[in-house]
Each structure stands twice: as C-alpha cells, then as structure tokens.
Length: 212
Ligand SMILES: Nc1nc2c(c(=O)[nH]1)N[C@H]1C(S)=C(S)[C@@H](COP(=O)(O)O)O[C@H]1N2
Ligand SMILES: [Mo]
Image (tube, rainbow, N blue to C red; front, top):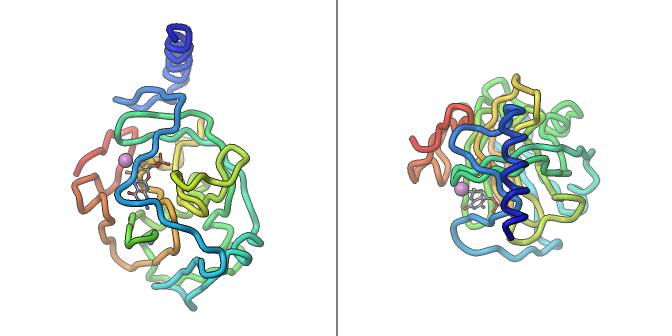
C-alpha cells in the first residue's frame, strides 16, 4: 500500500517535471466514474448516431454503420475538474475531422459550435474548432477494450491533452459526453448540462477554468 503510494508520487513528480500536470491536479491510477443519473441500456438494433443543425444534410448511422467508419487511436492525458488526472490513456474511435474530410458530414459556413447530445437529454457544448482537433474523439474503446457501461458504452466523446501539442486547446474531461447519440452543429453557443449548473463554459485545464 505504501509502496503504491510512493509509486504514484514518483509518477506524479515525473509528469509534473514534463509539464503535463495542470495546476491544482493530482495523478490517479484508477479510473473514477462520474456522471449525473443512471447508466442507460444499449440496444444495437435501435441505437443510432445523428448529426443535425448547420449541416447540408442531417446524417444518421446505425451501430453497424458507425463501426464501419474510418478509425483512429489516440493517447492522451485526461484531466477531471474534480482534480484527478490520468496519463497516457489509450482511446480508439472516430475523429470528427475525418468525417468532414471524407464528406460524411458537410458543414454549412454558419456552424461555429457543437452540442454533444447523450442519452436522457444530457448535453455538453464545445466550439467547433475544438471538436475538430485531434484530441477530441468519438470513442468506442478504452485501453484496447470496448468502453464499459459506466464509462459510456457504446460511444462517448473524449477530450484530453496530447503531450507536446501546445497548439491544441485542452478542456477538462467533462467536455466529453458518455452514451453519446448525436452532434448538433450550431451557429451560436449554448450551454450544456454542467455548464448550466455552474461549470466553466471554456474549461481550459491550464487556465484552471473550473467554474463559471
Ligand atoms: N452522459 C453524461 N456524460 C458525462 C457526464 C454526465 O453526467 N452524463 N458527466 C461528465 C463529467 S462531469 C465527467 S468528469 C466525465 C467522467 O467520465 P468518467 O466517468 O468516464 O470518468 O464524464 C462527463 N460526461
Ligand atoms: Mo466531472
């Protein structure tokens, strides 16, 4: 037990020296589960993923279709507003920027912000440019395995820090919706669930934008 405490402190000191530990954060080796409400059931026969709003044509993918989209793997450091950080987490899924590059989603020029819509009406907002960054992924897998129900199975948004990519803005981990069902492209910003509850709208981990 003391052993694992010192191992964690060593690891924390290393990422701190590498400039990867944002202010007010501490390293965790666990993967805490945080959300409002219940874990929803998943039915692959009725599940779909939709895009709408400022797009040329609304899109819809069934679970089978979603799994045929081009995939990407991503290693990121994730930073939770409740002050835990987890380093070198491994995710797999679909980049929104790929869907644009491949023409699967065609945006109208008015699209400036994106609302992630999840089961039970949960929402999270981000600027379009963040959703299109390489550190935002529509993730189906964590650490080589399908997401667990607690962490958002079958699909969630994830956002984190890619080491040495200071060009990418890095919001806190709550800016990825678990049990994600759709993306709404919006001309103006609207606040999501936690943003309406008092969390910061921009949520930059380096600026400690925790509460609004
Ligand atoms: N659908 C949904 N997604 C959500 C939330 C939620 O309440 N509902 N909470 C957010 C918050 S506050 C955090 S910190 C992360 C936690 O993700 P985790 O449980 O995988 O650690 O999920 C985010 N995504
Ligand atoms: Mo959170």
